[in-house]
Length: 175
Image 1 (cartoon, helix red, strand yellow):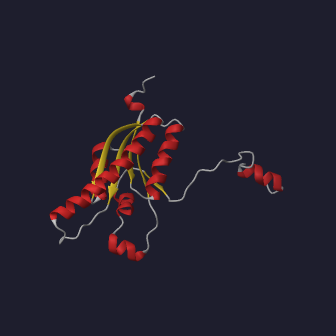
Image 2 (cartoon, helix red, strand yellow; image 1 turned 120 degrees about the vertical axis):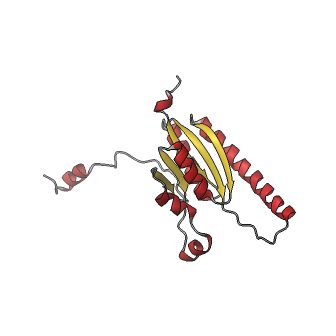
Image 3 (spheres, rainbow, N blue to C red; image 1 turned 30 degrees about the horizontal axis):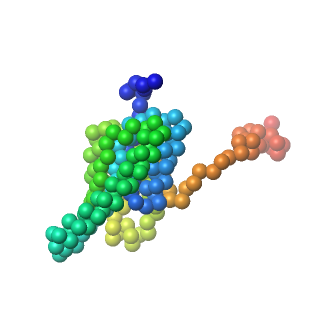
């Protein structure tokens, strides 16, 4: 059964080669398994700064190596996302300022959600390298889902999960 285009969501998924990127992609895979139907715009980003004194050949060698690495991640997650019914419409590999690309895509697509992984950075790291993901949270108008590193979904015993009223009634504190 083909889903009506207006019933499909639009998601920007921002990943990288870290644990945070893996968790963000796997959360979207989980939502796809749970029935989410969306067009996914996959952005793989690496904030790269190459020394201005590097030769052109060395710079090209570095960028080529990064693009090859990025392509492997992108192909892997594109297959994972499409395997659960999500439609990967576009893939971007950004070597540089990822914030600009996400802001540009957001203006064009008006996504239902932007998904990415992020870890807490100390003051010194933020000062030296900046924090484009933090800026995405505050500069975009779209809802944002931030995935933390190390998250693994665990099964829940729903019999143990009760509403507050039920729990209080058992303790005799609710009338």
